[in-house]
Length: 88
Image (tube, rainbow, N blue to C red; front, side, top):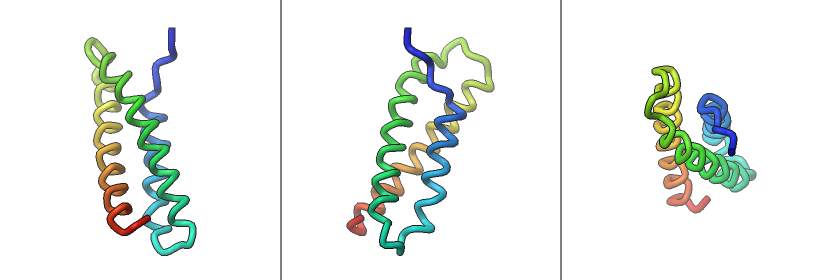
């Protein structure tokens, strides 16, 4: 039996990486920041795949956390697309 991802923890990890990305756009380490974002998005997408299957029958707080992770993952995917357009 695998451990269910914690939607709040996954959200927090992705939020921190997303929050740090804009401050590093002009930084020489921007490529590293984008790489970190890619890893965080992949992790969030994997967590969402598991969490969405388990959403039915869960309490409202769980469903809200999953929805928040889903929204933040979409935002991070948009940031990645923008970074790729700028060649990062």
